[in-house]
Image (cartoon, rainbow, N blue to C red; front, side, top):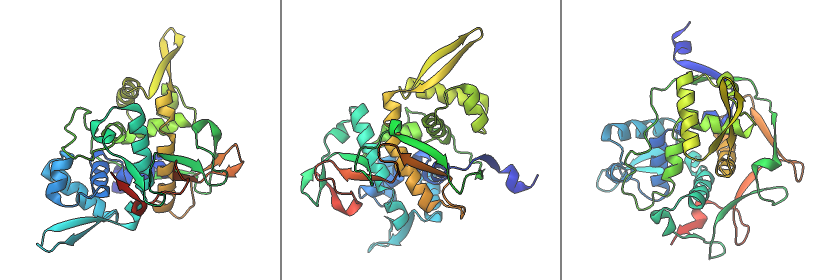
Length: 308
């Protein structure tokens, strides 16, 4: 076995997995969140995220290496970090994260923020709709089929471990979706949710799809049950075995994952095409999910949204 093979794992090709391997780490998500809201110096990010200086330096270097951040020097010579075109196109995932967080958590920071669409001038809530029929995107209305890039991926093994949910989330006044970051800032919890969207429910199903140790899978399933994203139902009494089904809270993560899938298809492509295609059953078209203003129906871009 080569050194490259020892340092990688094999899993089903997935644009969501590729995206998460790039930006799915908790600290990467927090850093990108802060830069979206205008926090762009090292000291500001250190205070806002709660990351140690060493961790922050490591993740800033990583995000630059994958072209999600660019470093420039300000008038005082201190480095300033800016979003790239690649990371700007994560804006729709950020809006879907805000929408989910606002629905399921009471967050004083988030409750005090009003999103305003500059195009229509109104306060809005972001929604995802199908570009073909302008109807809302929901998990029950979507079918999956293999794309031209279906197959397997070699994914790098990372030593980063899941950060405990109780870890300090920083002092940022715009820390708007910390619960989602704490939940998904780990490759396995996010992978389990993505597989649950495809109808997988049993431990043996998950372990066949994921190159993960059984104790880690058990830990992440318990985490998702405790978080109310999955519910546990027994299907066999002796020995006792359970199925894990998505709750409404879990199903409502689907627009966030759809936006992440679209980003991964574009920016994490390997030259073989999309591994998976989605169809919107109400209209029969290939699904392209647009995040729109619920007041005017216009597509939302970072430059068109302000905070009040």
